[in-house]
Amino acid sequence: MLALGAEDFLAERVVAAVIAAARAIDPSVERRDVDLSSETALGALVEACSPNLFGDGAVVVARSAESADEQMVATLIESAAAGDIHLVVVHPGGVKGRKVADALMAHGFVRAPCEKAKGRSVDEFIAREFRAARRGATSDAIEALRIAIGDDLRGLAAACAQLVSDVATDPLTADSVAIYYDGVADVPGYLVADAVLGGRAVEVLRRTRWALANDPGAGPALSAAVAAGLRGLARVASLPRGLSEAEVAREAGVPPFKVRALREQAGRWHPAALAAALVTLARADAAVKGRNVAGRAISDDGLDRDQGSYVLERALLHVVSTRSGS
Image 1 (cartoon, rainbow, N blue to C red):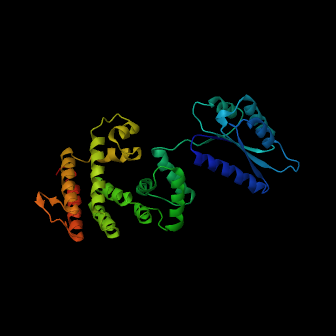
Image 2 (image 1 turned 45 degrees about the vertical axis):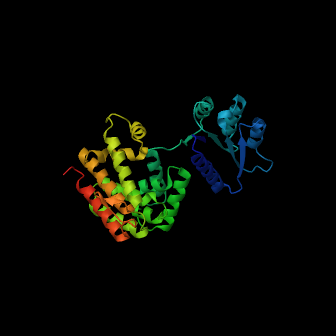
Image 3 (image 1 turned 90 degrees about the vertical axis):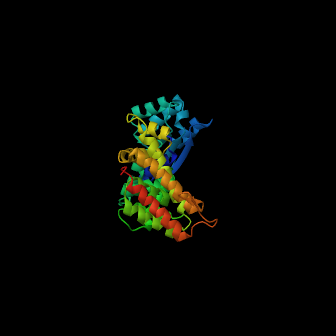
């Protein structure tokens, strides 16, 4: 087996899977690790691949394969052909040591892809994690999970396992993620912003009230999240349609996984509505923070919580109502 790619977490999973399969047949199978970049790598590899006196099975994990020389490659190929051990070679991919990977695959090593995930491949990874646990997840739930955790596969795998264990909803929804990651400030803001950009007024109201009920001081963060979403939408809308998602993400300064949705949403927003929406949000933000609203001064203490919530809700609903420039 050749674990090929720079994602350590996926390589670890390949190793664990091979060990588990071997031990399912023979529980006495031991693990032997060899670092092929060390000065004594060849001798250590030969020793690890040699059967012991008792004939016990072993899984040999040969790491840093990009540093292997011709003798090491020959030893790996011969050991795999002999069939006395289970062999997992870990190679980070890339230009360095490419001949090593090619030689191993040419001699029957099965490639297990372990490339770094990015863009849609992260979404696909999350979906696979849930499918493996026989659970479903909406696209909104997957995106909310990325907002909460980021794109670290190890963290995402742990988060998926926690959600499957602790949340009964099936399929898992964005609400499930938001409730579970209540302490992650970006999640409620993202959910409100996504509903605003999608023109879903009822959902905007529900999510805004939910966020404020859980954190009465969240008003400024919510308005900032929606404003950031609108600015990102405006930048995406201004770019040529022929650009790739990676190019759009770079030029617009938005996460690559958001580009597809932003492109779809951009066609439903009139340019004038975007400009008006940003002005509306700026006024609402000022009111919630206690500065002014529509040019009228507010007391130093600002609005009370109920007033601030009302102003924010009204502003967000107004933004949704002007989405098509009407």
